[in-house]
Image 1: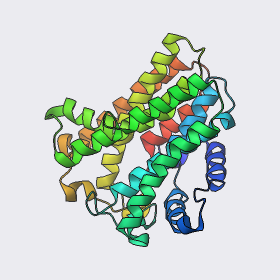
Image 2: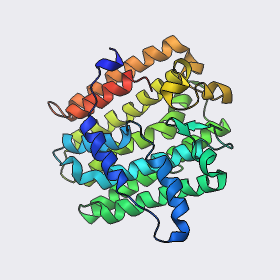
Image 3: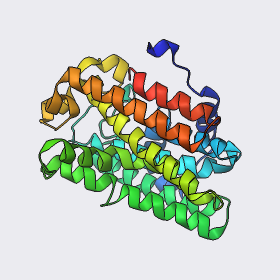
Image 4: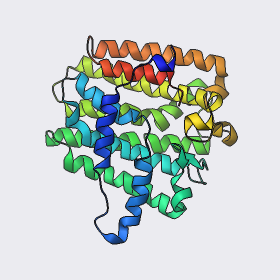
Length: 296
């Protein structure tokens, strides 16, 4: 299936984009420059896959998508923080992100580090102050997001990547990417489940299995695009994984097998989703197919 033939829930992307533009962070003129750097990276565009997943999951479980906009925005703030820090010279040393100079290239390394720190903190401030729901459910969603982005999640996976500490073989590679990339993608779905207290256990289990597989699918496709894409289409430096000697599905299995693995992962994700939301979840289907067939 060609990417141009794959639908995407653009209406949810528009909701996210409009909400992000309403956010402000500086409460003192002395920190306005920090907010400028934060918004520079946050509002640089993109498909907003993670927050769109959050809105689509809410719709799939019978909630108004707009009701989880604070949660969705918190997820995107954290994703943007991770990109700012990933691009730093001490990490991936990338000069471009989302088609514009990386935050540290535009504002300097010191301000970029602080911009990332600020986005992470403001994500939880936003979630805990603006997300409506039963207090225990909002706290559960915040806990889910914290675990997904800490040492047991995204940051731990990033450490394993730079330290080369993941176990050898396919299981070690999957664990590395489940933590580094998959956990935040999964949290985009799972945090919504935490907000909704009356879902059946089997439904929750199927959604979580879908979310986990979607994170793996995203990473396999990302690894393929790092080899086959271009800097123009990706909006960032092409071939950075190979340049840095990072373990990827392509370096481990080769391009052809990586493509087969992506196809298998796509089928598993769709099967889990069919069990989680039979006859519903149209937007989640669209996002899953888009991730499997994306070009950037």
